[in-house]
Image 1 (cartoon, one colour):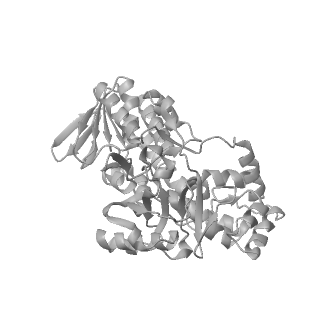
Image 2: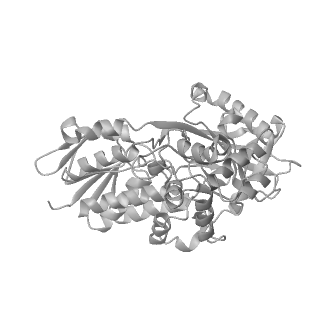
Image 3: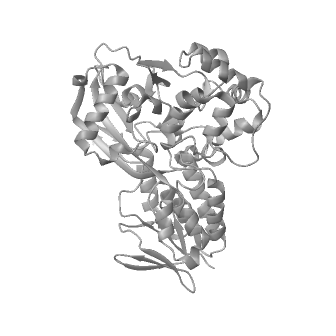
Length: 457
């Protein structure tokens, strides 16, 4: 088959990245996206600033987003957040996070000195150092692994809060193999998770940035990507797609405005949406595998606060709120502390990025924006120890991300393999997205590039 025309369904970071690779290879590309381009990489105007209502940076220890920024001429402008010290809220106090790899402690002494866990919990975690290897051959949940090796408290007060900020999920259902490759690597390296975490942490330069974003904000990368695509002649159709139908020589993409004939289709839509684009004869078992992938909903609230004399150090990037704290808010990020272009002259009136929602708490979804904002202010007051009157609700912005975060439950690898096999056996078809092989921006970009390459090959 001569690949000339490609329809990319979905205009998030995955779809735009795939479109870039295909267009640079000489394909005629059309991106179908009824909403704003960029997907969860979204922004709002807030005063003189553009503030992200989705991610504000990307993981720097994977190369894909760095490489993309360099392709777009932004490689020299990537900067790390100026504040990098997060805290964990427990029992009315903010505790420093001990040196760890995604919550797996590197040292017992540091875990004890953080005062996050009591002596009993630290003693239980230390048993990991001498416990025999006990990892099963099959996939298991992060919760099962960490509870067995380090105890319930390390999972509930350290690992789960850190992971909750990534996927708003449930550690007792989250696959180690597919959902948290860093912890999977720890478990494969040494029977002791603590020893593995110390070895892995020591291998990473202490001054190496964990996160990066272009100077001025992540919107600059999205703008540069959009401009590059348009300069390459990529077309954008502001319509949804009803169906993708295999024809004798290619594909027909059905939209509310008509049909588009192409040689190949690359989908980047959420898993259940992707399943609905094709008939059962095309997907077979892959349709059921896609529909089996569940999603969590979250909200991101931009909220200004006058800190006054509150003891919040400029080095503090934010606060993580464990599930056992019983609050709806899961994290509070100090945007001004992290990014100097957002900083006010006073230094005490800050913009907070307040995250709400996790898989195990959906009660907030039924609230209207006003009620949700009131609940968020109450939680932030509790966490930060501030009077509610210090929060400026008149300028607050509530963004809801319904069914936005795919859940990599145990067995995710097998489900995705079924989908990949179906795509490989169907000429001119590739499927990817946040549900595929990693949730973060670098993982999505890498999966999209591999999907584009599979069509070009």
